[in-house]
Length: 138
Image 1 (spheres, helix red, strand yellow):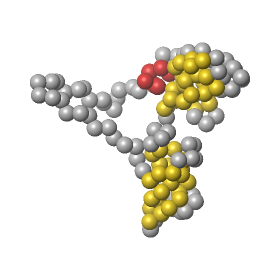
Image 2: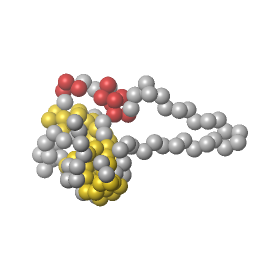
Image 3: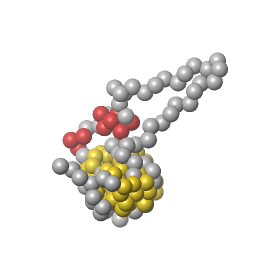
């Protein structure tokens, strides 16, 4: 039985992190969380059980409707992974140097692809849950 309780953990959408993440329950009404604290960025906000859905803008008169995304369409993350040899994934370490296109295994975020070198000490890595800025070469 999975009961939620004050001070317990629950997955919630974090608008600051833009991901579904583990949160600590700060307030409840009956058996439902109402206020949570993100365990990643430490922001406090209302509990959101699901990620928000984007509403496509209605086309103007005379314009064609934008094509809808289909469930079968691969994400950018999946396309980058499919294009690489994932058996050559490197275990992430802040002291190692990385190049654009490297596959990393991060202990917290999982498998990711280096998408940009920001400067000599920072890289942008795309994980399944979103993009993160990580240190390297320190």
